Image (cartoon, rainbow, N blue to C red; front, side, top):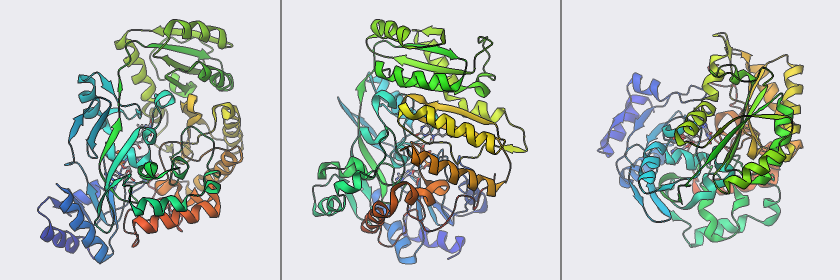
Length: 484
Ligand SMILES: Cc1cc2nc3c(=O)[nH]c(=O)nc-3n(C[C@H](O)[C@H](O)[C@H](O)COP(=O)(O)OP(=O)(O)OC[C@H]3O[C@@H](n4cnc5c(N)ncnc54)[C@H](O)[C@@H]3O)c2cc1C
């Protein structure tokens, strides 16, 4: 079906806004990734009934449906060639004493503000800050600097309401036959095949589901492939009374990551890293031998933690000890702008492809990950920018490459992913599989786990209309439709 016909037909069945003009289709053909995929139509449903009607229409006509939040995803997971469902009208928030009931289209920044008024916060804090939505965070199992202490989205998800592709609204966990059926597929032998890492956004997180009351966790990281997220009940916590942020300067990455494994034992609330390429762009007089910075934050036992940190670090200089909220926020903004600083360090003929940007290993193995990066950088004669969530063993690695060198992109990714898996890691700790990595999900988990993923997808979406080719795919999409 062509765009115009699709748009007209949808407009006949729903009252809400439907767009299919060229400009809107172009706008929704991109997100924060390197891909371009043009949809047929974009729909802005205002209630569940409209979503159900659209899903039934899509199912009958075999048209893919891709839910979309803010489009800040980095791997093309919010792009699709069928109908885009923009959930922006699902925007309600109700704050309770230890949880919040929130609609999927709510922006993280709006939620943060509302929670702050109530003296509370939601733990996972992606570096993109206020600009992503709760639906997108759940669907990618997003996390951030403070996930070291407060976990990823999956760890803070209490319940979720979704609409499946057949147009059925369900709350998970539902304590129904359906939950039991899914649970039966998840044998302990399957769970043993999951990597031992603190963050993982690859595939469906079956390792987090041991009883029927965990069933909602299957939606975290499912990238719109199992259902349209309507709303969720999320865990919230009282805002910490005081914080201390310490910034450490290291001569090199290796020493910083070796120390990271020791620093995490002091239970900081965050432990983040930026390398020399980024440091060079920050307006501050760092010691001349600075090759890498660690940001270490504590939000409890402040005095003891500082004494312990002093005893733990080796060959590092403390360049800042911050206790004032304004100063702490300023330096976190600097850390969170790492991708922006990185982009400023390349020329118009170069790119920083999103491909190997999100591997996670156990923090003790970070030094091995750094060695893998070094070898790849040497072999392919590429400079590499590195930053990220050191405390979680999750580094964002950005090789500086010539634009449109697609063959090399794939070669490097394949090599890098096998090495990461050899040391027991995950190919993605927070950004997900999307167009960039879905073809590698089987490589990470093997045939047995992958076949369970396929069975689960079939239960939720028998006609494969929900965001097809994300997570489960037989296609190679990594270099297809890539603009850089
Ligand atoms: C500068 C920058 C920094 C970033 N830093 C981090 C970081 O620190 N940590 C991190 O985890 N991520 C990070 N990201 C990635 C991204 O911001 C997160 O993945 C974010 O959670 C995506 O939210 P979104 O609303 O933009 O989702 P989108 O990009 O719109 O969608 C992402 C996925 O969610 C699905 N989805 C969206 N809404 C729904 C719904 N209602 N129902 C079902 N599925 C849905 C989409 O289909 C898609 O598969 C960063 C991105 C940028 C650009």
